[in-house]
View 1 (cartoon, rainbow, N blue to C red):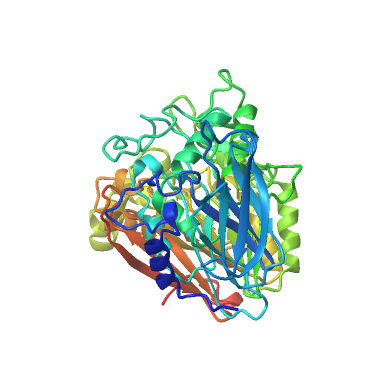
View 2 (cartoon, helix red, strand yellow):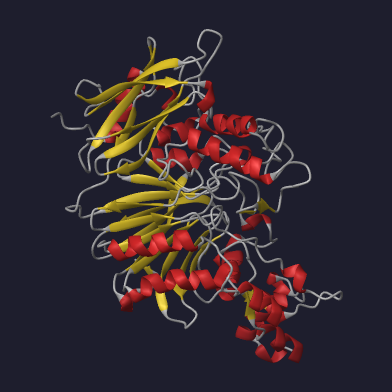
Amino acid sequence: MPVPLPRRRLILQMLSGGLLGAAGLGTAGVADTVDPRANPRFLHGVASGDPLPDRVILWTRVTPNDDWHGEIPVDWRIAEDPGMRHLVGSGRLYATESRDYTLKVDVPNLRPGHIYFYQFQAGAEPSPIGRTKTLPDASVSQVRFAAFSCSNYPAGYFHVFADAAKRDDLDAVLHLGDYIYEYGKGGYATQRCVELDRIPQPLGILMTLQDYRARYAQYHSDRDLQALHASVPFITVWDDHEFADDTWSSGACDHDESKSPFAARRAAAVQAYHEWLPIRMPDATNPDRIYRSFDFGKLVSLHMLDTRLIGRDRPVNIDEFRDPAGRLNVEAYKAAVADPARNMIGAEQLAWLEGQVARSKARWQVLGQQVLMANMAHPQSVIDGQLSMPELQTLRELERSVPERLSEADWAYLKADALPWYLDSWDGYAAERERVFDIMRKRGKNLVVLAGDTHNAWAADLFDAQNRRVGVEFATASVSSPGLETCYEMAPVDIAAMYRDTVPALRYAETARRGYIVITATQTELTCDYHFVDRTDSRHYTATLGKTLRTLPGPSHRTVLDT
């Protein structure tokens, strides 16, 4: 068997030989979309996903035209070498309009922890060559994967994907949701889309199957996203923007039911997601179900949760608990948020998770999911609008420096109770969060939660309602969506300090830069590297390692630590 080339050398050979074609490296200074002359029948590149020890999903799309339409035969092959000489599998598929000419093949009989190369061919025209990897067996001593969230095409360039595509040490990539955004031109974070030549297509907000398909096609035309897809297998879950803002199981805050049924919009979005991403459907009869587990030997059991669609109840609306004068009925509000009947993931998914965790022998139980699980409660004085966050922070600084200057009212603001505020996160579904914590705590599991959604980077300790430590959470910054730096007229370092002062469990905050995280797990520790890019509004960028944090196994070590 030929020994795989070191990846950096391999990519140079692929680029020089034209093998990667549309899936070239995301290098600063090059066009952000693909040259259609490189692989005219495969304009959207290749991808792999949902690796298991013995199999992996391969994906591509054939670009139809007047000569290529109807049922298009496409050959696929997978090999142990980048020259595609030592084949271990091959076959033929047919691309059809009913699946938007996308193709998937679930390749079996592969070896665990092994790198493979794959390619498609339509007629005489080959696709780029992709690289993938199966999950390791029980002998593995280290696992490393990257996690991403909130990739917003018109908001900026995907340099975060480009930086990760240069790595040669990842076993997998997780995308934790908001892979696309549904807004049209003039919607959220599209202010510079003309200047950046990243105008959303179609121009309007996504509503129909045709709309969602067109938006995925635009995203998959991005050179940097193609590069990452072509180099490492993806494991994905959706969040709200694959559907509509603040989606729950039967609606969304940004959907007008009187104009169109949400059920039809939801079904269209689900179909396009399965067509355009290299995901294995756990239940062919139920495309809504995407929660599933992946075992990286005996190191990591990764449980990918759906906190958005299959079980989520409509979020609590805090304004429904205010009187005409704007005063909050605190007790009624707290009771609603803590209602044990409220679901985030639902009873069926919760029972599945409990079974997966009970059977797992892995050192680390990792939840790959969308929204923050840490308690991010804010003081009532802020929630009630009596003070802004910066004003409260000024009082905190006075408390530390010259407390005698504080008035009785100031002290009352400082001592105000903390209440849930970000109700789209687990804070809005407190009872079900406790059920998840109970599953881990009763079995003595080492819990690590991964999150996205907020566009900012966080790390926090996780405590249950009895203030017992149950695990840690690492949350990634966005790929390109703007963060809290756009919400306050403060220096980013001061914004981060303000949130650390507000949330006792918070151990790290970076609120101004776009980025991703890399998780490395061994038997003795799990580390999280926070990687950032300095800008997304120019084709030139600089990537840096911003912070490394870690956690240790065992009930006495369930906390975020500096390295």
